[in-house]
Amino acid sequence: MDDPKGLADDLSACLSGLHRTIRRHVRSRLALEPLAGAQGDLLRLVVERPGISVSAAAKELRLAGNSVSTQVQQLARLGYLTRETSPTDRRGAVLRATGAGEERLALWADERAELFERQLHRLSEQDVDALAAALPALRALTDLIGTDREA
Image 1 (spheres, helix red, strand yellow):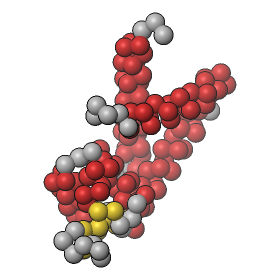
Image 2 (cartoon, rainbow, N blue to C red):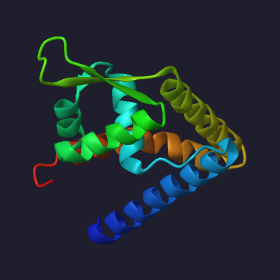
Image 3 (spheres, rainbow, N blue to C red):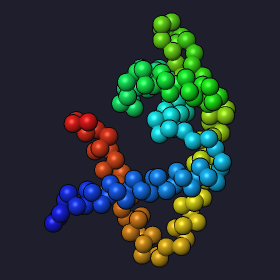
């Protein structure tokens, strides 16, 4: 590789731009109130792991406990999460998504998938093949970044 820093910068900028563009498009199509990135991440985590504790969610998301508690309060006010007393530790709380929270994520995922499908049809076959071939490397990079010890 001739320029690893250049590749890292280009890849980071491209993926960040793609994520922002998708988020803006889906939000405008669904006319949903915006969620902060941390709120969306927390809601997705709670849907994936119902009954997760606030402290476990904070650890998983690599956020301070008080930051997650603030996100929980905001998502609960929006009707997307509930916070219940933990059945195993009365001092702790567990989180569950409401039907509205699950529906929001499902609508978001459906619209995002439809957006990708529409746009993939507009690309050349070679570009689609290149994207498909890049998926294993992108997944591996995601896993490595997720376990980076310097984070």
